[in-house]
Image (cartoon, rainbow, N blue to C red; front, side, top):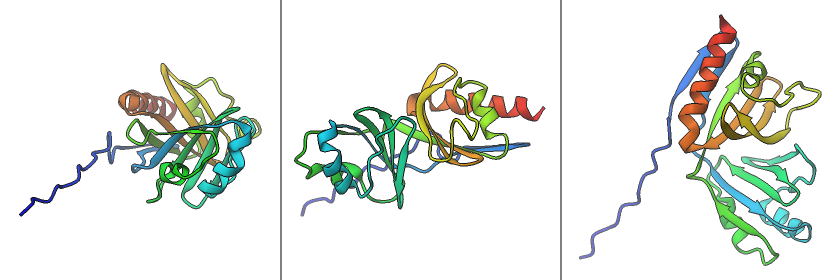
Length: 185
């Protein structure tokens, strides 16, 4: 009789790590499905239909539908994140229009930064103007935090999602923790 093969269990980087300070809270977000999507303008409609949301076409723009978000990173580039059980890579697999969809779920992790001091804490290492006028709810950008590249999305007036490579996650979380401690002092 054949022995059943057990699927590997992914242990997310820094799972459960949290930090609270006077005006902010940091928390590692649960694992999500992610793809790096590249496509010419002629393929956007077909990919949007397959993904169930309209891919944004303007700088700093994002689109969300249910648990899925698409973040504009460049004229032909998006980071698609699904916090639910649906894998956007599978959604793109049947699209015949020219595109490149690469699964980056294991490469990235996300950190939630919330509270009235969230923007100031991120600005301790990010040169982006995070005022609500310049970076409104739904805005996103590929930028830096200290010495690490991040993708930043404002999810509410006082909340951000910080996406980074898992190999930089300890650095990014520690940087944000130090900034939060300094802001609380």
